[in-house]
Image (cartoon, rainbow, N blue to C red; front, top):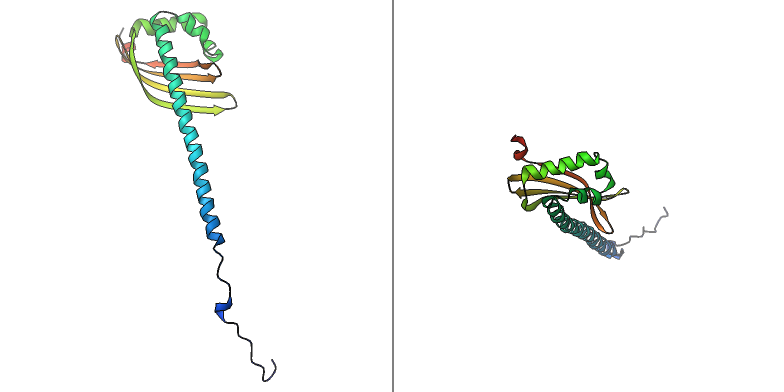
Length: 165
């Protein structure tokens, strides 16, 4: 360092303040993320709601066919997976047995909805607490969503009525 020359001091207040742009960008990024998250949440909710409404209509139709003894129609209108779950005779025997044990349908209340969209299609699994002429049952329907509506893929029914000989 040369003699007689004082070092240059730069005052701290000459530095420009931190730009506010970073904070504004962060805020807008958070707002955009919240909007995207809200949109996807709304889409999922509306998908569940639509699936539940479609299922309720399909269950009314199923119960109507079951009550009238139109078991062949249930099997014919069902998905190939349901039709392959047993021979036509076994499926007829199953549906006949369900109806003869439980009697006519008196009503149902949806208790659970699960929607699964995959490369194999969109499946809606819905559980109902159902009331029949001779007792209550828990029915689980699995539907495949298609352009024309829902087709039955699986049907499971549980009731204490089945335990009585």
